[in-house]
Length: 94
Image (tube, rainbow, N blue to C red):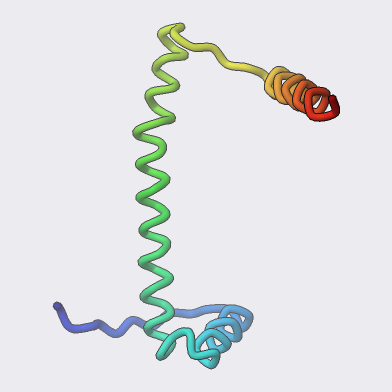
């Protein structure tokens, strides 16, 4: 593993307070561990979002453009949900 590098950053007093609270709680050995884990977590979330966009959003847009699928308004989506909810509620009430 490559040796750690030193990086000077500026953060708000509120972020500093929260960082120190996390370290003081024992959740992290020191500020560097907290910052490193936070960066790793953000990079993981970025990769998940990019994967979702690439594997789900882009193909869905392609289907819509090829007219293999259609878009629904929010009203249409909620109407469908409301119909299913009311049907389940009526069934459960019997």
